[in-house]
Length: 272
Image 1 (cartoon, one colour):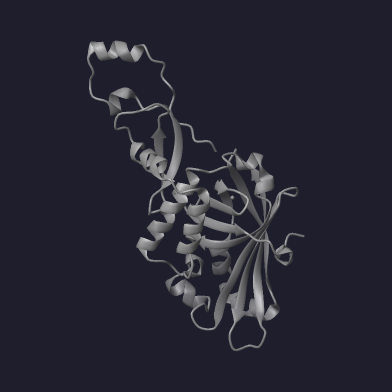
Image 2: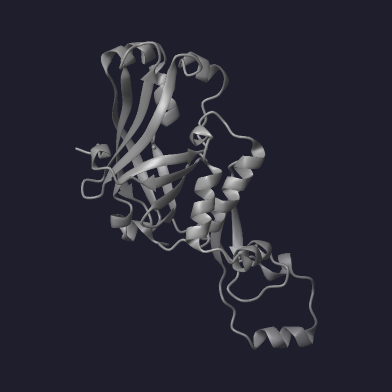
């Protein structure tokens, strides 16, 4: 538990009906502005690339999204507050959420992304560094996976933390566990990874190593350790789609969304 998309402008004959000679002369008198592209997320987590034209357009794809965003008068603080309220009580989404709730969360995420105050986060890594706490993710542990990992009966998930050392290009993810029936047996899965800048908003991530402590907890997961690591393995790339002083949102190459809050507790900083 982090590319500027380039696409040729859409040919006019594919989006507009035939026009008269008079209209052609009017168009020639105006300077055309090339299209830029932004991405949104569908509920099936496939990226959809949407053309957004800088000038007014007539029914081009993306106009509805632009109109909705520009007409929303809520401040970033209000949207963030609403988002944090919506993700309360769902255990970070790890065991699944109803589709209506998921759609509500993603709509708020897209609204924040459209107003990202840090459009080039890898050029402002000070905003990314430090310790973060996961509040929601589309990563899920369902069905037989949950049963095999013992997460139905006697092992519960605690907090998820991520600490980022910008100077070293290192990230450490910590997933806390609590074991019922065994006095004071708390433990954690620690995953260390390296990252490097791939674009103005994307980083490439490489898995380094992982450990489970204490040994008693490792013994419980040993048989299904590869399954556990496969769920939380950060290998791939991460698009930092929103970041400010207190919240960060990312989308990875597997189609997952991550929402994190900055953590103020120095004791949770696990980067060494």
